[in-house]
Length: 219
Image (cartoon, one colour):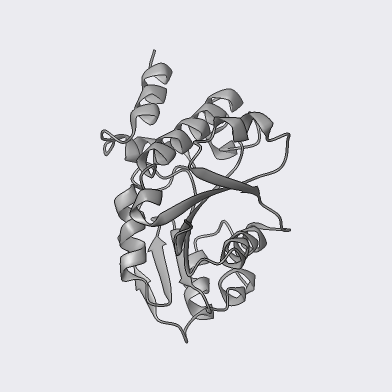
């Protein structure tokens, strides 16, 4: 039976030269791609029990290549669909709209490069959500966004927002002033070599693949 809440992991298919490009040339394209895959694997393992707790899990993936192998690697409990849109705002908007169209009442979306993110974070997001919930990131953007059915998604994603800049969160909040917005604690995402050094100090048992990646890089 379908649950009323849905969580979307928004990710690129791990491909050398196509993901985590800001880690290059400190790391090779293959190393950056491996990191993307390991971060996603850790996140999927962490949220594996969410469907049993009332939250269905989706993966919205970039469709830059044949997704067959990627889709075959996903757990059976995860539903997947391709992203579409001209920019990241349109793609996030369309991903959430797709899941709302399937009948869900509340939807939360995150990226996949979040070593501190756990199932508890996602459950907390649904628990505090009134209309919109946001998890701010340290770089001026956000790592999590969620909304209830009935909230107009367009201002969240199609307003004048300079995606990838430090003003993303500020611009988003200006666009949704009429809504009740709840906030989660800030978290780090991994985009640059400096980000890697910062998060390295905070890894724990749910970061098994990420820790293995670090071990391999230090050899």
